[in-house]
Image 1 (spheres, rainbow, N blue to C red):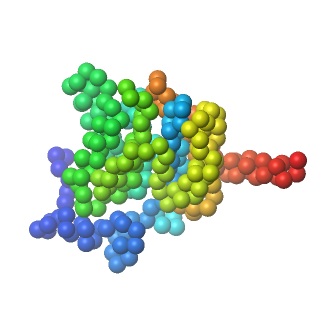
Image 2 (image 1 turned 180 degrees about the vertical axis):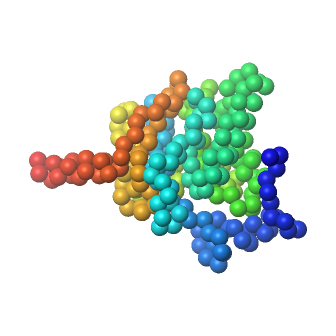
Image 3 (image 1 turned 90 degrees about the horizontal axis):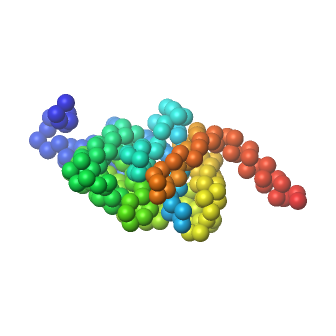
Length: 246
């Protein structure tokens, strides 16, 4: 289709704002509410960027899926994460991949992470107030080194070293703030990404499933692995017991 179906009213944007608000605490009177939950995180360290996510898709108390791929591979050097509405994130980040490829064909060079995140923010600005639900991170390695940006459905665009997005992000931030150091080794950084997601899935009912971890390097991203958070629970429980009884 050449265009999206929009409400047949005089002002579609205003109609969406009144009936499809996505902000926390602002949708209690709506017949249609976004019931979402996830935990995604990414952080920079001396050897690149770690991206770690869960895989649970929920609609309120109903677990729709335990195998959602929340890391979108935009190109061999760029990754995006999904939080909010799964359809919105998947569609617009794939659209971002198309825009990045068009940039490469026109300019004969790879797009920077800053430019890619700006393209997504520009798209979000055009649809601001139309009911999209997105909290994404765009990360990768370009000529300036490893870069990490946060972009959401309000076209907010932030550059940073540590981000966590989703209903379980407060728990993940607690672990990240406690153990993060820029000089982490690659193994330590991977372990930190796994532990932060595990603790978020343990405390947040809307996060869970499989923990997928990616490492962004100068040569591009690599998928480190996938771990069932239930297995991580018993692994870390055994570590606690061993620490208490040396």
